[in-house]
Image (cartoon, rainbow over all chains, first blue to last red; front, side, top):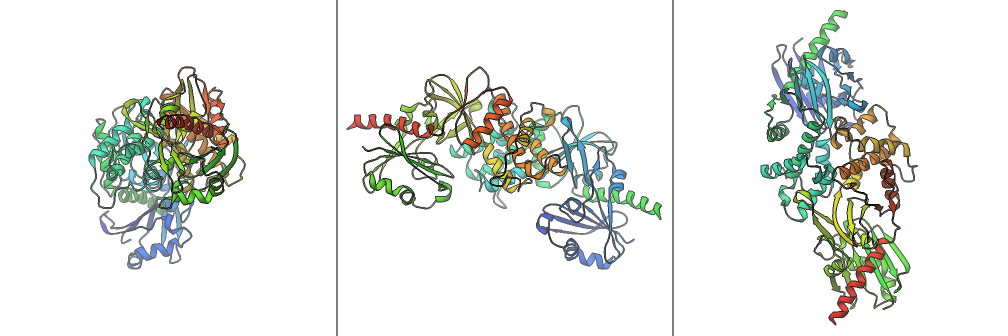
Length: 311
Length: 311
């Protein structure tokens, strides 16, 4: 084997890494080719368009794919693995697919858990990032995104987690709603003060000032009364929603005890969440951007051990 | 004067009534001609297209217009009247406009208040419906809609109110989100059981089961696990959001004391809110659909008294 190819193929983005046997990342590709945009298309052809040269140069390099590509709307559907889940369990839940040229593709599973009240929760892709954090001591990992995840990890296992639709709600509101047009223009300066005001408004525990449904209307009211200028509404809204996420998570017990908090994900979002944590006195650690690649490799090695054992 | 024309001209709909001197509604018109769809157009021409025959037949009938037509994005901007506000105060805040043919148009004002924490809130159109309820005893009026209003009324005055973005969030989520396609097809049967399950999920006070951001993800999880069938997701989501609105309103103190609750607005929504109230032991009264017309007439009479006095 000359190396491995690791794909993080989600709803909105395709990211690929060619990784040497020793774990060094030798090459990378990224494209706005999420499964949302490629449904009904030929996933294998789409992959070849992006990383054809790697596939040609390394015919025996296996491809490990994490994320929504393994979902009902993806290439093949990989069943969720139940919590608690560690890297060996994720390896066991992976599904292999032999491509036409004989290459092996391995689709990594997502994870499901039942939370309080019996409600199911699911993740696909984040579990692979968590496997790359190699956390042995109990920790809370927060992965901001379209559907943010708060994850309890201990002994290298995902114990339990909870999802929040924060990112999706931000996109919907900023694109289509009463604050449409509020989204910061590309390259616009981040308005830290507006974000902090939003954090305070969204994170307040004072029920008399309302819950999220009412506080969201407050964004519009502040536009009408010009208490927040139009250019700052996007960052105010972002703060309000992230503040609301922290409020909900704290009420659900996520910040009880003294587990250290680690943030993983896109640098921009992680920085906003770090500020939100800091605002309530929590000093969160920040994972580097390659946790997903390391996690896929860790799961890959377990998968290959089992596969070798079967030969 | 042969009568009055009353317009309820909002973001998404235009409704008109021709009303006799004694208050009887003689004719009605309704069109999907909200100001959202007519921005940049000629509002006077749009009105003439809808009710030209009334205008021609009754050249001296004044036109009273309530709703978003009097907002910054409407025909003319009428400043908000501050709470507490009664019909005479609303009449005083109205703005007159003489049309080219000499006819008088009167635009009714919206209302603003400052709630706990100093946050501003606003309404435009609902105040006119409330004026038509003629409530002399203290009551809580709930007006469901794109931006639901909970209003405290006493002595015929609007004392205070709070807005919730429930309807807008439902539309956004059902149209564009992870549950898109979930909106019930036109004419689809209302799934009462799914709605009630949603009410229970959204209205629960158990913080461990999450807040709204987390419970909304639960809608998606229930789709994936098929705990709610696709055809029922729209009604489940509707129940979850309305349940969340009641939960927030109750936490903010709206159901403290024993004020009677009255519901006013579209029959379909009012029935859902009546069920939500009933689920927590509240027997809400339901206003008839002409409260807005009666309210406009009540305000009109005060307006005309003052106008006559000035002559």
